[in-house]
Amino acid sequence: MRSVPEFLRRRFNGATQLLNAVTFAVAQILIAGVNLYALALVMEALLGWPLPVSVVVSAVIVLAYITLGGLSSAIYNEVLQFFVILAGLIPLTVLGLMRVGGFSGLAERVRQSSLGEGGLHTWTHTAGENPMQAHWIGIVFGLGFVLSFGYWTTNFAEVQRALSARNTNAARLTPIVAAYPKILIPLVTVLPGTIALVLFGGWGQSRDYNDAIPLLMRDLLPNGVLGVAVTGLLASFMAGMAANISGFNTVFTNDIWQAHLRPDRGDRHYLRVGRVATVAGVALGVGTAFIAAGYSNIMNYLQALFSFFNAPLFATFILGLFWRRMTAWAGFWGLLAGTVAAFASYVSYKAGLVNFGTELNASFWGAGLAFAVNVLVSVAVTLVTTRKPDSELRGLVYGLSAVDVEDDALAGDARWYRSPVLLGAGAVALAALMYGVML
Image (tube, rainbow, N blue to C red):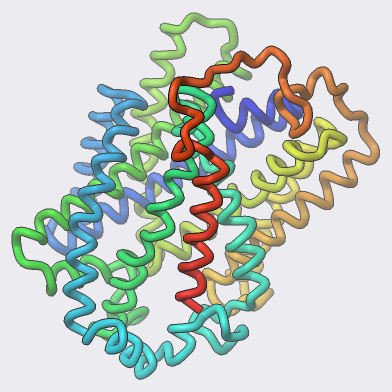
């Protein structure tokens, strides 16, 4: 299997695949716009380039290396860019902590700010008492379960990297190994953001939250390190956009064009279509960058998109994977109902019909609602439709192994440091430790 849509086609039917492929393609273009806009913000704040110029220049650079190098270039660039990002953000975090008097000084300044004590212990405060005005149900179920699990299991960038691995064991290790740096990333993102909050004023009024990191970089970093930090941020957003465009290209070519519009054509035809899709995706991303520009905090926008597209897909994916009784049309109607529920929840919040407190909290509740509606509709449709025989579900449902899968183990896979179970347990333990520190 090459993608999540292909899994949905084989597990359910072509209609489910097409629905997911279309919504996924839209999501990738919208998220590509977020990365382009973030790129433009850095250039505007530190280099003085106008927003439209920054967006177009960034798009051309990403288009060049995706078109010339394909998926391999995107993956290798992401690995290299990760280390460049750390080379810029680690000094920024250290210098920021020195400016505010270390961790104790930062904690004291947060208590004296508009956040108060809740800014240090969001988990331990009820809705209305913490800065997000978020209830623990929204945080634990909507964010901690639906959005987080959905990201790691259905996000195309993660799945695509696993599918490009050299064998099955390497594919299993891909998200696990990636989890280790992801767990530590808040140390160089959340901490600088909090430092910016207490050093600068006017957030949400004269200043956008999107400007926090660029302002810190401008004021704290010496010229040499500033160059590395700017390069790191630009590399980060370019890597994100490259992943989005690569995902859009793959899904449009394989799961929409080849599967439903122009089947049974030669490889050369689909290669041309993929190249055209790449150019079109970048051009559309330029347009959606200006949608992202309408948000003072792009994290709110990004989480809203995840609640629309990732949350309902996660419900369909996890049910289809573990519940062999689930029928083909249950996958389609459950996915559609969950997506509509997420959109309806967000629109109701924006229209003032429901009060979730903050836009970010609205996305957490919307994700939870999308998951719950999807599950209910899927169960209801399953009860009145006919399931597929087990012979068609082998290799697609937990407990029904594909008997024709060849053992592709390589020398060294049996060593302890390549064990998915051991490394997975280590990641869980590290995450629990970090959460304990936060509490």
